Image 1 (cartoon, each protein chain N blue to C red):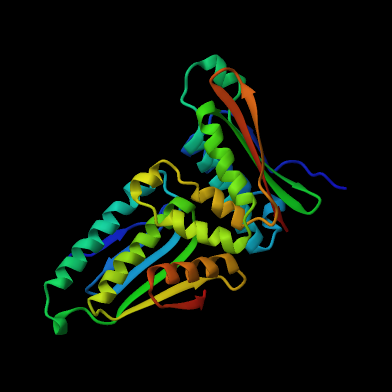
Image 2 (tube, rainbow over the protein chains, first blue to last red):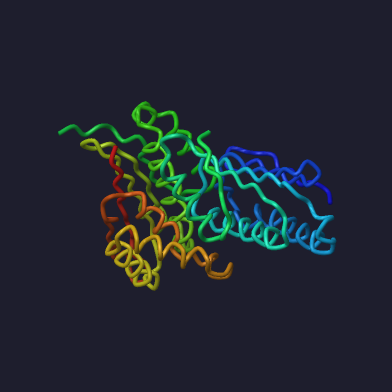
Length: 132
Length: 170
């Protein structure tokens, strides 16, 4: 499947979904003018990727997928879509894909750490928390 | 008691471009940059959510006279070691009860209850999201140690002017 790369702007994050490199990455600030329009292609890509993995035999599925979330800031509307991304990742996890989810936060940014913990709990995925 | 000059004191029509300019103004302010990073991010996030809230609840444009009379406003000022973000905008009277209900509800909640409400609201379907289910208000409430202060001033038969103040400790 073709990789998806969305370049960052002052108000939207860098997004890299590259299955060949086994690398998913989200970083920067997220408060785009139209949050739904921004995240819809990402969610559609993940849905298509899940369908493509579903059609494979267990031993042919991608393994060791690195998913890195390094947000500087995201607004509450973005938070809803970011949770949807984690729910999509959970669908991949349930297919048996080995996901390594890293949630990066600055050393004293307890708010960002706490949001990560909430996202982990709500999506039922295990995160590794890393000080950036 | 020391009352410093406002970092942002804007009154007028607010577009996404205006928001970008106001956020740049905030980011270049000396008082803002002197804050510890977590506090800086709380102030920044509160300004973003306050402006988003204006976008969500602003009454539709119905005439230039009315708009010039009560334009939206956003202010960020430092007062006695606290940062106060104030936002105001004209809303339709039929939105007052809903907004008052949401604000009263979150002001009565402790952090645990707010987190439960956050989870309930963030998991709502997309159709509910677009109407503005109040996640921004809950997020702001989680980032402040004080209640969100607010009031509604009557502004004619159809509208009220809604103002809210969020305080963030340094």
